[in-house]
Image (cartoon, rainbow, N blue to C red; front, side, top):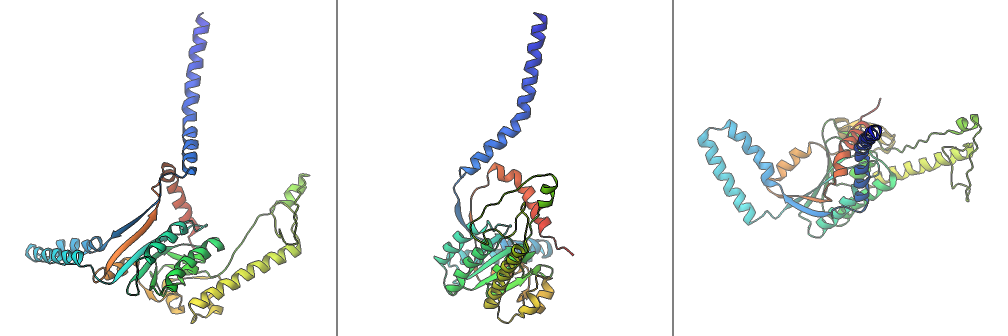
Length: 332
């Protein structure tokens, strides 16, 4: 009986430890399934940010002005804000933020934001897109650029602000704008196309492993990861890449006809100051400076279409941010 009691206690402890070890995995599976079911509904938010921007100026004046002068400045500011709220300026600036990844997933929000702006914007209004992207899939960024083209087609002035990077697909989006502003050390350009694929065919043959690939259509598959690639397949793959590059350059030339595409369509990137000299951007400025200046005589609205972040998103967000930063670092 003693032996049986000890055994049952040991078994209970072992099961408890195993259950505790499994809990994180069970919780992860539950969160993944919940996120796949859609999660909370997305919503459109429109925030007037004039006061938020001008408060920065007041914070500085509170430290620099005398108590008497600041009291008067505060009184004047309240009058100005009250008047602006009662009779908003006729001119408006709508702000949309685009933070791109390899698949340009932010386009799902951008398309809704653009649709919302187009429903109310007029020729006297303007749209500012703060853009940060190192590029990604052609079809993803092609669609994102097409969303911005909707503004141009309706004659709504469009400005793109680049504080850090607009390269490759990111520049494909930026070049649609009437005006591009960039920080002095923002990374601009990379008008090129890249594709890479590992091939394990020799490793498979070395270990006597056969790989069968069945296709219908001469060029259904050109290069593969496991099959034996041919010179014909490589040539076709290169031709496809060259054609994509040619389309990219034609797209840029259509929107910025004064660019020397022979000089800037090489796949290289430049920092903002050099990009200005080459005509890739129109002005050196940060998005912050542009917004603060606009807030002085225009109503500034930030437009966001977003889904509330799930617990899973909050857990993996730091990892995604780190991966994005590493991917966007310039390489020698």
